Amino acid sequence: MMLSNTNFLAVFVAAIAAWLFGAVYYGALGKAWLAAQGRTREEMQAESAGKSGAAKAFPFVLSFVAEIVMATMMSGVLFHMGQYSLRFGAISGALLWFGFVLTTIATNNAYPGRKAMLTVIDAGHWLGVLVIIGAIIGGFGR
Image (cartoon, rainbow, N blue to C red; front, side):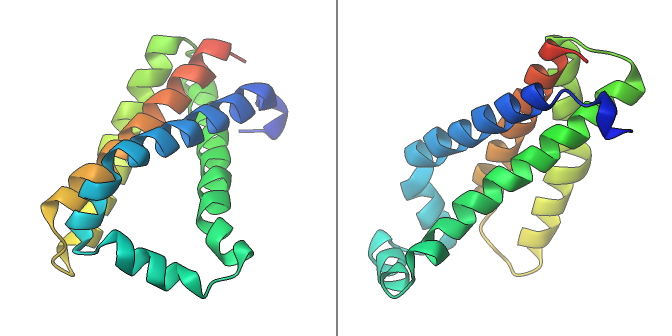
């Protein structure tokens, strides 16, 4: 894949949409996500109290950068497949999620014995992200 074949407007729009999806998703599932980690909101606030603004913002910035990388790679996958459509992009996102993301999250959570619900919640987020990114990149085309 050459970056000259990348639709950077599509990449940026896809990353923004995916990031906003994550904000809504974890906003709705925040309590369940904390419970799946065995933590409380008070514990999270106490940990965060001593952090700088930059340290607090870092995970949000990192997730946006990760979504830009994912959207760029999705553009490359669709380019190499020679298929651009909203449907093809969404299906590609779901298949890539199933083959790479779900398997990685499930494995990483199994070794330390994390609750299955944490895997369900986090994997569900990344499924949404990849389907959204794929649909937008596919819908924009080259």
